[in-house]
Length: 98
Image 1 (cartoon, one colour):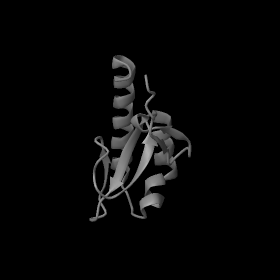
Image 2 (cartoon, one colour):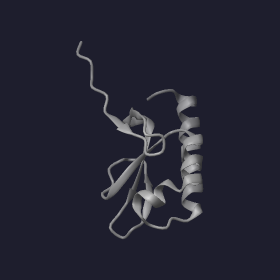
Image 3 (cartoon, one colour):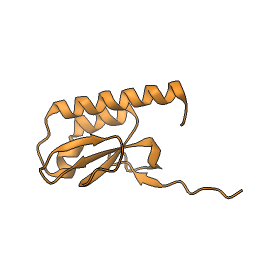
Image 4 (tube, one colour):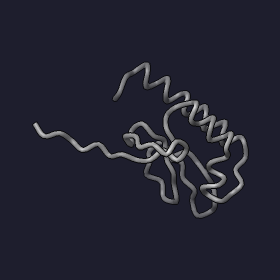
C-alpha cells in the first residue's frame, strides 16, 4: 500500500513545521479584516498557528499577527483565537485524530 504524503506548514509563532491538520489558518482579507478560518480555504494573506493554547497565548503576548499582517488587531481577536484553539485541542483529545 502506498504511503500518503502529509502536507507540512510552518507555525508562525514557534517557527516549527507541523502537519497542516494540526494548525489553524488565520487570514487577512482585502478589507484588512483578520479572522480565523477553520476551513483553511479563505482568500487573502494568511499564517498558520499551532493547535496549542500556550502557542496562542504567546501570539497574544508578542502581538504576532499585528506584525505579520501590519495592521492593528484588538485583544478580542486574540481572546477568540485562544478560545478557539482551546476548544479544538479539547475536541481532538476527546474524539481522537479524525
